[in-house]
Image (cartoon, rainbow, N blue to C red; front, side, top):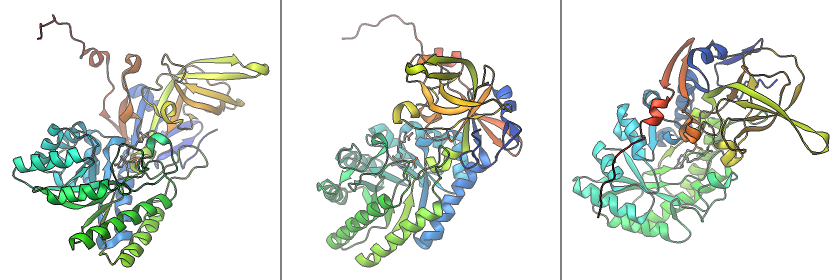
Length: 450
Ligand code: LLP
């Protein structure tokens, strides 16, 4: 039995074999909205957003900048409204994410624009909307932002994304601040200083400070501490050269959450206290005023709030070499709604959510319905032997990078997201249907192009 309250959302409970979220049985939700289904615990989301905000203020006081929710982890119009209502900021990294923010009426000054290859159209729209901050990531962008801001008759507030040269202890594809990576300007190579000079020389850029994001799913403070230290040293170098201090420092996101029993979601107070201690100490050493410190948690806010419900469709036991066997349980989703196991070897846990079982637990592999043998959700988990077609499996902690990285592989329709709160449920992102899938198919006669 895999009920692990620390991994499920705050308002989840488990009794007599029934999982409930915000007071509603998983089986009721599945019946009402179909499966696969993302169930987001609205109160949990709002609490986490406010908790990070309060924690930043607690540890940095007057130097607390903005908590920017990283929209890439999961964004829809309703969630952008929750973020706004929590009073925090929003980090968008494409024109599409900005469009969602705009649809939600998200205040422009609390939006921060990221991305390593922002198009002219994206920059122009961000400036037109009046976003608070643009984080530049290349020399091309410095030139583009300056030119477009000039054309718009304004000055763009900019942070420069730096690469502090840190090997974060995480999967290669989600580590971002070592040297050989596409993001940021390297401090070590001198590129970062050149970016500073270009921003200073640009007529329509106001350089506000620096940014670094060292990676994702990080559990220890050392990487953040080293990053903050290197960024502050760089700020001191700026002060020494330009005789002026920059007011902002953004330390990025990456705070780890629990996915499987034994893991512990990082406590905001614990990590921010550690970071604040180092930042304050370094500022004193370098005789710098404390800059406004911002952070960008994505996974840590949305990850634990969401549970995926799947219906079991088929089961199968295959013989392995040496007389062993493996049981496969196939559900009605898979890598199109959760690519993380295939992409990062990410681990999850699962719970039989619709009934009590006293059957012996056996080593089970949970797979999806895609035409690909790598379509595995959980490689090996002990689950009751009598799990059968029609049963409901709940996979917790799927809020971050699940729906947001979902695809239509095999022409699967992407699942709905249902928000539950105090016994009520509402769809905030509807399930795709076949008409949606076919909407892009076009039959037209070829036009001669020369
Ligand atoms: N800030 C920046 C500049 C980022 O690039 C990211 C994530 C974040 C903040 C938020 O990081 P978080 O707090 O959510 O870890 N698809 C991968 C994660 C990619 C993260 C990309 N950038 C995954 O599923 O694990």
